[in-house]
Image 1: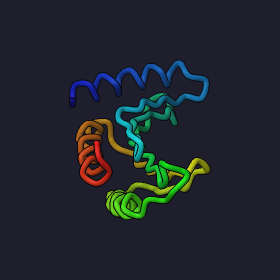
Image 2: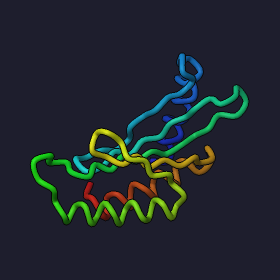
Image 3: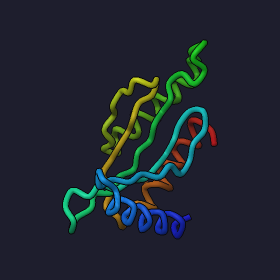
Image 4: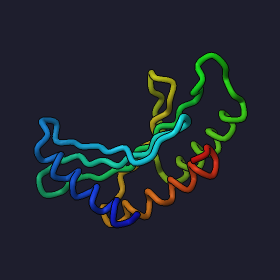
Length: 123
């Protein structure tokens, strides 16, 4: 997994360099309750900014709120906030959680948040 993440980071950097907005993103995991991805922003040519983003979908079934899923989502959100993720409400029934991560720690952080999400919100 670390190797795959490492390859994804290198590809993202090249994609961001070619992008008009100097940003690239790759979703790595998803289910009905969340999506995890990594990205890069080229704030300057010599210092790219890497990040991990998690989208937590609050009501995957728009017809009915599931209190059990909401409780588990809240647990994840609290843990992500403790890990210094910013939490932002989105228009599409989800909360975006993002943290800037040094490139050397991307694979480790991805593994940690993937485990957190799988533990609380399923695989």
